Image 1 (cartoon, rainbow, N blue to C red):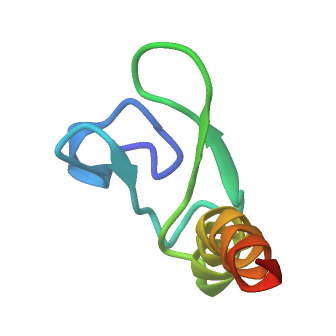
Image 2: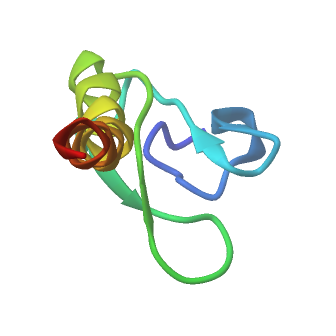
Image 3: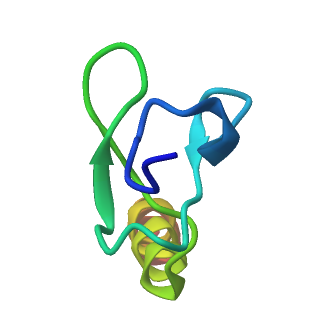
Length: 67
């Protein structure tokens, strides 16, 4: 089995979350559809997700506190 076969169902949870510790890439193309996702086998991917989710929340909180 090719460990970098990104279409392999064994590396996808619910067809959305990619986790392959043998794949050195952090960003990978989605299994289906358009776009990219992170390889959740890398610790840095959780930091990236936290930034993507956290920055808008931080901005909203800062704007709310300005009132």
